[in-house]
Structure formats: C-alpha cells, structure tokens
Image 1 (tube, rainbow, N blue to C red):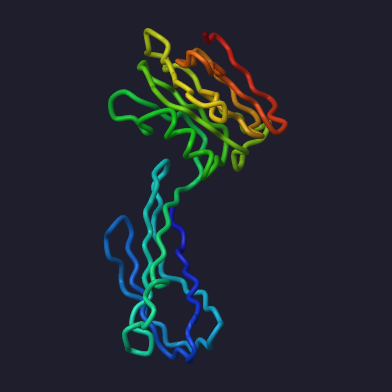
Image 2 (cartoon, rainbow, N blue to C red):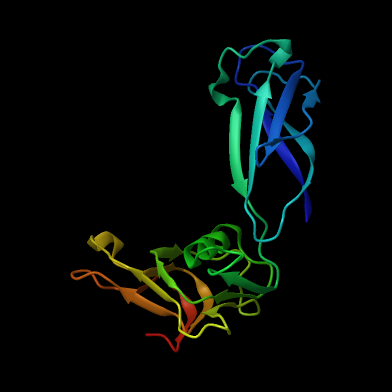
Length: 219
C-alpha cells in the first residue's frame, strides 16, 4: 500500500544551510525534486517528507536519495550526499508461490530472505513448486511472527515430486543447509533438505532458543 517516504538531511559542514534540493528515485525512476528552504545549522538534522508511494506486496523497492546544491552551490564533500535503500512491506496473510513459472519468489532462499528482513503481517504459506534448489539459508527472528501467525513452507499442491533444497558445506563455520537462529513458528512440509558435503553434513542447525519448528514428510 501507500506509505510516506522520509529522509533525514544532516549538515556535516561548517556553515549554515538555508536551502537544499533532494533528488530521489524509486527503482531508478526520478520523482519530483524536493526543494527545502528551512535553515539547518552545522551538526543539525532535518526530517523531510519526500512523498507517498505505493509499495507492491512481496516486492522489494529500491530507493535512492541524493542531496544537491546546498545554498545553491556544489557540495565540497559529495561523499555523504547519497543514500540507497532496498525495502519491502511485510507479507500479508496468504499463500505465495516459490519457483516454477511466474512465481512470486524465484527461489526458497529469496522467500526466506524476504521475511527474515521485512517480516510478516499475518500467517503466511510458501507453496514451493517442484525443482532442485541449491541454497544455504539462514534465518533469525521473523518480524511479526507469533503463535497466531505461523509460517508454513510446503510443497505446492500441484507438484508431483517434492522440491529439494541442497548445499555443500566446505567449512565447519558454515556447516548447514538451513540455519535457524531464534526463528519461531515455522512448519516445513514435504520439502527434501539434503547436505552434499562429504565432511560437513549438517542439514538443520537450530540456535538461540529456536522453538515451534515442525519438519514433516521430509527426507
């Protein structure tokens, strides 16, 4: 949905700023330049609302913000003028496809990374289509997850064979296919996880009081 985009402008210089322009872009598309005519003293910051944009569900959005022309002149130190952010909304309640043709997430690793960073707003199911996914996945606490908002990662109902997730660990410090660090409330169903390592062969590693994890119908 629509959310306001804000930027914090800080004066790192020695002189007062009376005017400055903010160039901002969404996924590379230029938005209207924001003109600021509020005084910013050295060391002070100003929060500026740039505008409102729509953040599509289950989609990451790239935001680039650049401060230009302080007091109508070029910046003597442009190294701190640009900020780039990649963000996305928490997932709404529903089922999201993974892999196959026109999925919402291309791989399980991408889907897990998304909720690990941006969280969920309600219970979520990832419907994983058949395929061999080579990936090493690590998740921490999922923002928004709770006993009433479970996460299910399951084989797609139309899949004939279970999807497989595999990885070859070469070093002891990354000896896992799936690591859960304080991750709570995930049910894995009909997903095959396999270690390809000949020396290091851990598949699931659970740390930091991870709880309410269910692994069913998996090899």
